[in-house]
Length: 299
Image (cartoon, rainbow, N blue to C red):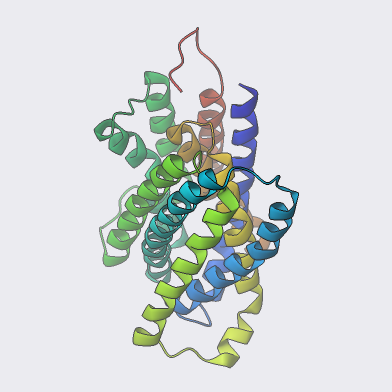
C-alpha cells in the first residue's frame, strides 16, 4: 500500500509537469514545426539525464556482471520500443494541437484512460468494477472540462489526437512491462534519443527549421525538454513500478485538468462552472482508485 501511494504521488507530479507542458507546446508551435519541437525537446531530455545516470552509476555497488549483460539487452529493447512509440504519440499530439482547440486536444489525448483497460483485456489484465467506474467518472469529468459545446464533429486533428491517445496507451503498457526489469532513468534516456532522432528525420524531410525561430521558442523548448521530457517521462517510468497501469493512466490523465488550470493561471483563460465540475469529478475518480474496497486486490 505504501508503494502504491508513493507511486501515485510520483505520477501526480508527472501529470502536473505534463499539464503545464500543454501551455509550453501551444506557445512553441507559434515559432517552429511539430517535428522540430519534438526533436529538440527530446534531445534536451536525453542530455539532461546523462549526468544523472553517471551520478547513480558511481553510487551503485558493483553487482554481478552476467545480470548486467542480461539487463543491457532488456534495457535497449525497452528504450527503443518506448522511443518509437513516444515519437509516434508526441508528434501526433503536436500536429493535433496545431489544428484543434486546446479543449479537444486535452479530451482526445487523455482518452488513453479508456483504451488501457480495453487493451488490457486482450493481454490478460482484467480491471475490477471499481476501476471501470473510475474510468467512466473520469471520462465524464474530462468531457465537462474540455468540451465547450455538447456536440463535436470528427476532423483530421481529432483523428490524429485519437491515434495519439492509442499510441500513449501502448506506451504506458510497454513502460509497465519494462520498468520493473530495467533501470528507469537509463531507459528514459534511450527513449528520448530514439524519439529525438526519429523526429529529426521528420524535421529534415518536412520542415525548414530556422535558428531565429528556435531561439524565439527557447523557453517552451527548455520547459518541454528539461521538465516535461527529462523529469516527467522519467518520473512516469519510476512511478509505474508497482502500480496497476489502469490506475497509472487515471492519475496521469489529470494532466488535462492541470492544463486547464495552467491555461487559467498563465494564459488568463477563465474556467466555467461546468469546467470546474469536470475538475472535481476527475479528482474524485483518482481518489476512489486509491481507496481499498474489502480485502479484494483488484488493483
